[in-house]
Picture 1 (cartoon, rainbow, N blue to C red):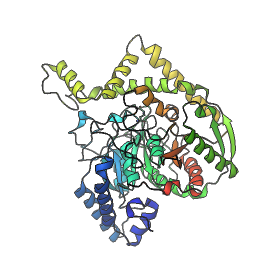
Picture 2: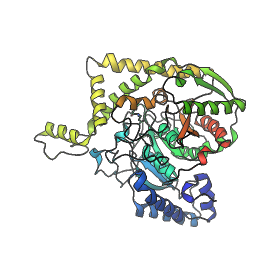
Picture 3: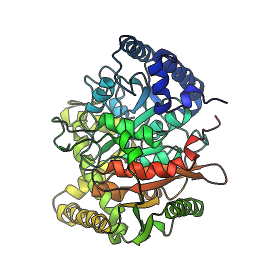
Length: 488
Ligand code: GLN
């Protein structure tokens, strides 16, 4: 049986569009129809604009007819996490604070996707201001995992993962501050890539923790991830942290770069708390690489046990500063009953932010306050350097690291929401990468007995995304986990 359009990859659809066998309007209509069929159950979207999507598809078809196609993304419907600005469309960060905000400009990644001809279809649900691991912190309600609707798709980019795995987009973008692309990719059986800090412009991304945030793709294959990465990467004068570096042809390199690679297994990532079925699937993947002739070596990242503490000091400190602008005057929801300016600030923030965001602002304000700055924030910055050094030391021996992405498969909605600490533990294998600024991706590597997806994480060296994608591609070609689709 042929694969329905809404479950095909960019690499499969692009030649059909190019040959004229398929139009972007047909494809976009198929994705819209699929979205309408599943959205009441999955709830991945905060908003979509059908007319606008069809207009973009028509423009793509017209370009193609005129011989002016812009390449493989031209005419492909993509979804964006609702923290990435699209000119003239709502931008909410899944917060009541921005419930009525319409973006007056495009993020750089949005502009780049438009330049590549993509059809921008819908803004996807997430944890409020990207703070969370389950998409339950959204002011608009949780997103459901298409593989089991009673469970979370992960977070914070849960809508980006759920929409793609449900067939409501052909690929999506998310953002990853501590795991928010990789963890939902693992929980929904997708490829999710968190690029090196500085590879992608953050201009037009609603900031959570600016020294950690990166935008990246969710895709159905490593090839699709390579296509998207190539489209959005590159220096941008509007983001001073974006790096001047040559952008390789990631897609072409996928096919030319060959192993064997030296892969490191960080012993600290296989300890207590790892679900046995997840551990077994990752071990099998390691055995696959070994059988391919890769040298597998155990390595140590000794400061791993400080990652969670360090992350929750640095991320909350930066969040408290970034979110100060949402005061009801400069930005965001304004309370109707403020008596004076201070009262407006207080009431607007009390009404506009949800509990988790408030918790983080309070924590972050505390660790930055005088007297505690040295004890917490400054010390966390020093530990961060040690964490990065652990990775760089490991890279003297190996090319990349291989670990589970998430210690557990998708958990039930509501299961962890009462206890922030157990929720924070979902990120133990992903946050070190953000603290160190490294690229990493998650790719499907199996299912539990009860049918829940399992993800494998590959962690690479700075700006060596091409190697990372090629390593993942070698596994993907020998397995078909990524071809499975949920029964919705
Ligand atoms: N779960 C982590 C947090 O809540 C990571 C979120 C993210 O990467 N945006 O901070």
